[in-house]
Length: 536
Image (tube, rainbow, N blue to C red):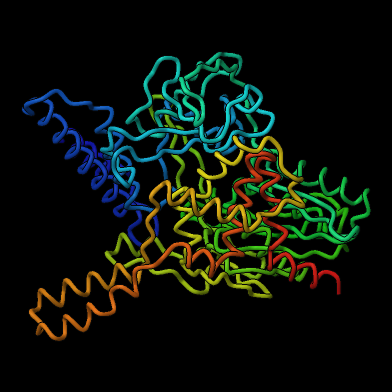
């Protein structure tokens, strides 16, 4: 520490005084503060090393310290050690070396998948169509017992994912369990470079409306988007509904490239401002628009963020599109990836996004956290659509069935018992299917408790704790039976929604993600409104 202090003092004495308003002194003070705190961290680590009773994992301790520090800044500044190179590549390119399947974890003996759950299991949630897992007969619902002999029981989901991923061309052997199959079995797969298609779904509606849903703004997605739009135009598309709902963003250059198809060349569509001038940049369209006059509607929701907000917000500012849906997330912070020691990387927030009108997308000022203030979401942040269609956000039986994986588990059994179903665009869940689903819930001992019921129980505890008179407590308890829901009655009240969500899971077992997406669009109120608007 003395050495660090000496360096700071020498810099102060020997450097010429310069800068406006004492900039040199401010810089020296900041350097001293950084060196001081690094010295404190180093000394604490050294003391632990010398004196702590057990041997410690210093790599894990350091990563935990870095991650805890970054959480104090904002949710988007993230440290990636070398071991997480694949995760960083996946985030920026949409590519990774692996088997092409989404995995999820389930609790073991407990009801919730706690980190300490030593019995938790990992299952295949969804194999991607045409990828190694699906091509080799791995099914949704298969439980992964081991990966190349490494037991998965009780392991972290990220660790299981790391074992599944690897260099394309290498093999990985999965030991699996499957409902209806008596004994575990093995599948040996050859890993591939898996690229997730950024086009979630596309179709031609009413012979003249092109519909494209973009999953995320990964490398090369602008070319995929243009190619798909050209294909739909050749089939008769004259208008476009561009669906950015649930799109969390990605690479800003890809967003600008997509905008270049709809607005004049050299139009500023977004700019950034940060503490360092090098990060201030203006983004302008670079080509003549092939679809400058094409009628355009953009769909957004509360999960549309970052690059999605740049596209939708710029088109709104330039009066080039009609926006329909919910106010967007409000993520207007720019990240750059910087290399750090030992081949790691730091994704760090460097500036903020501003739209052509000058409005900032960002809804939360994370600087308040450093000032000790409570974080609040600015209602002016994000993008407010021209036509607002808000989600009801009601928590009903469908939500509970979804979070407890009942729709998923039933669809796995349904797929095993029914070799084929009708095409995705015509499949329907019958009343007989709902009856069978309810019998399945009975078999699984499904329990259903409302938020009202939970709060009522807490209220009774408080009433007894406060020693209210027995007559009052007895009167309260009289209402308790009416708050114990019957799941069959609840399903009957919300049958249409239950049928829709159950049908979506069943369709996905046969026709994968695109089939499920197309099925859900059949009852999409926002899309219906968009079709009305663009057909005027």
